[in-house]
Length: 248
Image (cartoon, rainbow, N blue to C red; front, side, top):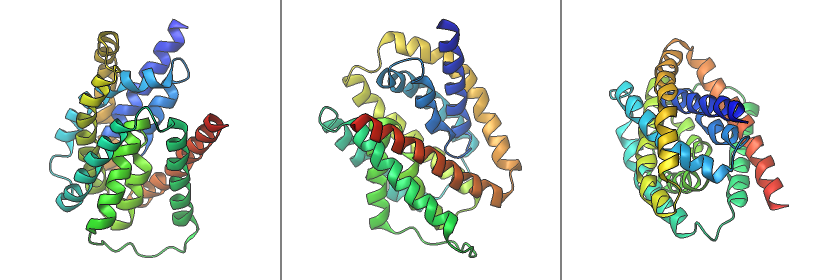
């Protein structure tokens, strides 16, 4: 069991790092991978510091590639969502949130896959939808580290270049993860043992950040966003399954 624990832990940390390097969606797999060998709530608490450390390197890598307007809209909404998640942590079943996030992701991915291809023209980020999806992103990220699908729902149609898309996501979730540290500590999910383990797992995570940055640079634009769409679909289907199973 110790061997399998470390295999799962290193894989999960690498997934976190690659996600912070800009590879779409893969970071969402980290908690499910760790949940194979431990309680998912404990896994989420253990991985949050790994996210935060990886964020620092992701922020450096994408310090010149981001959309200020999108950040200015999404982040305030996300902070509100985190506050709601903290306030309702003992009331809302995690399975219900997981199911909702999965359904949103599946619906959006299906829309992207089935609609006729059109030239993606850059669009101006609108405030009201951005605040709403930002709040949903913050809430679902707090409850189940599953903030990527609602984030994608708002940002994919904006037509950002892939580097700006990846950088904006990296910065957004860096702020969200830092904001989650206080409520996670207050809820007892950041014990000394978890922090010691997170310190070890930060090493493969940091290496994977730069692997992710390299992958984004060399990946063709169409392939990049096709990967985003299909990864969103697959992860969302897994979330639907997990959420439905948890509610039955």
